Amino acid sequence: MARNPEIKPKFSAEHPLLFGIVLIIVAVALFTGAMAFFRGLGSSKSSSLAGDKIGLCKLESMITDSREVVDFLRELRQNDSVKGVLLRIDSPGGAVAPSQELYQAVRALAKVKPVVVSMGTAAASGGYYAAAPATLIVANSGTITGSIGVRAQYVNLQGLLEKLGLKSDIMASGKMKAAGDPTQPLTPEQRTYIQALIMDLHQQFVSDVASARGLPEADVAKLADGRAYTGKQALKLKLVDKLGGQELAMETLRQMVKVGRDAPVIEGPEKKLPLLPRLFGASLSGMLQGLAQGIDQAVGQKAQQAGGLSLEYRQ
Image (cartoon, helix red, strand yellow):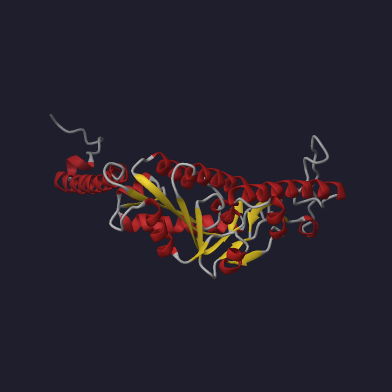
């Protein structure tokens, strides 16, 4: 049959050898990446099978979302082979609700098995909130911790808008609904309202720390003027229990649960990345993970600076 000259032949028909090579390369890459991906999945699941283990959970950078850490703490709580958990915290704090969720997750875990906190450079404000319910808190003498309090950040853009010849009109269902809008100054009544919110959140923080640490609420309230403490100072104030680094904290935990140094450690949470970089190798995955962490930190540091009021448990 004669070929219709108006119909352009497919690439696969025109270059069968080249097309076959491309298919083989793609198939090998997908197979290799998929095997590595599923091996990674299998290692985390199989680690719960035999023998006593230690859990190592990391809470790092600004607290903007607690989901991954909370989920991992729940996995460790439900895994009977995990006899104790080391919670490594290196965070200046962050958003209010995620900090409270971390507090609740650590408290639930500590009711089931020992939790030892190891504080790094900083475990302040929301970072300390998360640490408070642990069985034991270990801080370096130079760790920055405490900073029990709430901060509100309000950026007023009214002057900038006026220079640009812009004016903002707001319609709201109530006089407090627009409180904290960056285009309008706070009225005295709105300022009082926001201050009441801050003090209520502050009282929740103080009450939870007092309950977790077994301290009189009045004593914690005296410490909770927002100031940070070194690990050495925090020890004297009973905000932490021991001075030392991560190695000492891990050894203390092993002794508490009577697990040897050769026991496996289940570490997490894993940084969740899209499927494609997980399939196509560590270099791309590492690059995207670093980019994601950089974006997360930048967003945390600049959260709502141009969008009105921000309430945070942050140093």
